[in-house]
Amino acid sequence: MNVMSPIKHELISASRVNGTKVYNTAGEHLGHIDDVMLHKTSGKIAYAIMSFGGFLNIGEKFHPLPWATLSYNTDKGGYVIPMTKAQLEGAPSYERAKVTGDDSEWRESVYNYYGVPFYWL
Amino acid sequence: MNVMSPIKHELISASRVNGTKVYNTAGEHLGHIDDVMLHKTSGKIAYAIMSFGGFLNIGEKFHPLPWATLSYNTDKGGYVIPMTKAQLEGAPSYERAKVTGDDSEWRESVYNYYGVPFYWL
Image (cartoon, rainbow over the protein chains, first blue to last red):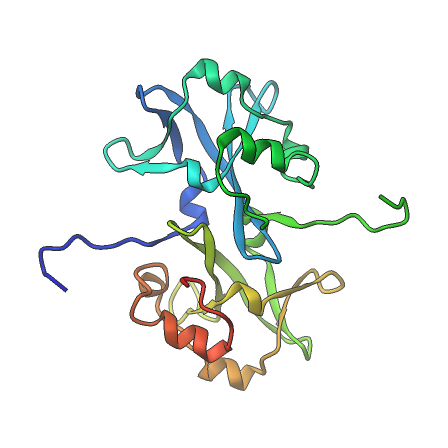
């Protein structure tokens, strides 16, 4: 390995992902990663759940984001997703119990919304 | 869906996995899941890290376990892996910094040890 090559960080721990802030490309703060949902049988990440708004869990919204939609920005120290705040208002979001529970009824619409390959195939 | 069919829980949150106890098939407590390592580009779980022993992080051992080695046992309320304590002593384990860092030098030996398909292919 070339000594000048940057250190590769191919892995990240779930506990470090949780709590990480999420911004859009305009630099606006959209929320933070509340948790990562794992698909038991495939060992794949189903979603990162972004939480935003609300106070003491009242009015808080939870957006399931396919992992592929997130890119980490080292300058910002957070993830960046290419969505305006207005777009985010129209993106799929659910209450906490639903977004951390059975996703079989809504996963396809979420993945189609973001246009990324299904995690379950 | 048949009303008598059990509720399917295909997903689990990373924060619920972390802290879950690990037993062997003889019912012996081996440790607990300390964290889950995620592979950024593929969106796959690289390892669950099992921690056992030690006190205040001194003498603690960290075993990277491929996700497929873990099965959840509802009676025990924890994961079960088919390893005796003696086998665990001989299984790959690393210090915390190594097991949460770059795995390119040791991942193949870990996956070969457990005989499960590589997560990175």
